[in-house]
Image (cartoon, rainbow, N blue to C red; front, side, top):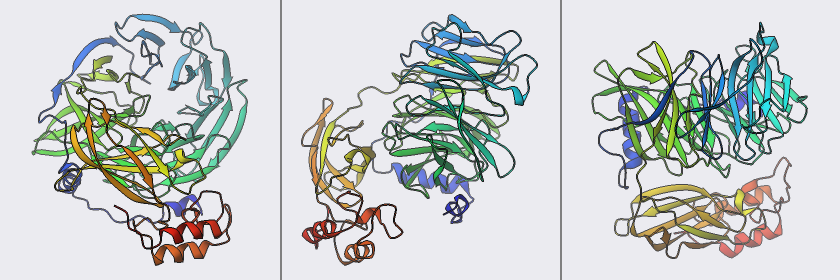
Amino acid sequence: MTLQSLFAKRSSRPTDRHSVLRLLFLSFVLGRASLVVAQPQPWQVLWSYPMGQLRNEVVFDSTGLNLVVADNSAVRVHNALSGSVVRTLPLGSGAYFAGPLAYHHGSSKLALLYLPQGGGAQNIRIALYQDLAQVSPTVDFAAPEVDRPVFSADASLVVTANRKGDNTSEIKGFRLLNGTMAWSHLVPINVRSRSSTALGGGSGEVSFGLRGMGVVAMSAGSGSVLRAYSGFNFGNGDSVGHGYNSQGSILYGVSSSGIVSLWRSRESGFPIGYWLVPASSQSTTHIVCRTSALSPDSSLLAVMYEEWSGGVMATRLAFFRTSDGMPLRILSIPQGITVYNEGLEASGCLAISPDKTKFAVVAEVSGVEFRTYVGATNLPSGLLQPTGSVTLQDYVGNVSSVPLTLEFRDMLSGSTLERHEISASTTGSFTLETSLVGEVRAWLKAPTWLASMRSVVLANGSASSLLFSLRNGDVDGDNVVGISDFLRLRSAYGSSEGGYLFDQRSDLNGDGSVGAVDFLILRRSFGQNGA
């Protein structure tokens, strides 16, 4: 299947954003606990620092004690608490910062694009720092015509993308040991230059936002296209950021029109869910998202956007819990301060600290001055972090690769209060965050397993009986094991992974083939219903 065909099936969408998207948001949050205050809270600025005018980027280091700030004139390391300049990273006489920063929180490596004196696009170089205490780069190598770097999962490569034409982009992977190019591929997609890129949560994948289309995931090892995620441009908006959760099982995307989309990262196609960046007033006519950022542990998503009401613009900063889209806090930015916006591409202008207590943003003040602001997220306290475990019966594959859907439901009405897309560890254990307290019903479903539900008490950071054992055999995922499951498995019977007839969902035991063992699993569960 070609990349174009992955995007070919695109359903028509409503065009009345104000009414339709508000309805989507209301349908998502009705019946569940929400921590959003009625009116946005004023932001609390810890410190600010004047900047140059172009190519502004910010990123916290893995300790949260330092903040890297870059503009055309300099790349500086600030103390994240006081704002004082700790050091300036040298780029050489007459050189200047030429592109986004890439930081690998696991290894503390920093990569940046720069141009030597008098250089153009053909002279772009990448400087690699093993840590922020280095005086000079460990490796410095030529990388002509590249843009938007991101590290591979093991920090052995820097992967870049650059749009070559209207419908062609070049993706390159550079070895960080010596700066040589590992691979280069021309792909028939329009990667948005300086647009969002993300690392696939330890999966060896990187992804790139496409102009007005969606997101494409690629192998960091070979550069080959793995899958495409469509429906990202709901409301005709371009990508202003996306990322994976820490397990690499869920992918999030933010469009400029104000929709946050959610996909299972290993399944191509349209999102499994949407949520809307919330308006603070019924009189809001439209919302334009400018930039977004994920926390280093991928549990918190920040979106900075402009809200228009009666011809007056207000700038907001919203924080969402990525497990289920719960809005945790909305901050109101003072009038005259807007996100720095080079064209419509401001994907590196916002960052969240590892402990999620601080954010940094490059902002434009009254259209004349550019500053880096560091503020307090002021997230609500008291979120519980219950742990649990799941046993996936009759399965020999990697449990951590199986996506799980957990819902907390009201004890009386059965309505869904919260919905979490989670991944377990290889031993089946998992952790999540919840705003709920008290007795609820916990419902858990995995793709080919029947759902199970039990009553739990959420209190003091723990949950009683958040333990599940799921029965295998639901090939078609409708929570019933019946004739349709048998027919689907029969169609794939005898096939193996990589073969033309292979159906991963029919491989119930996860051994890479569909055979007698899978048939016996289905037969034992035949006629059973999930909770």
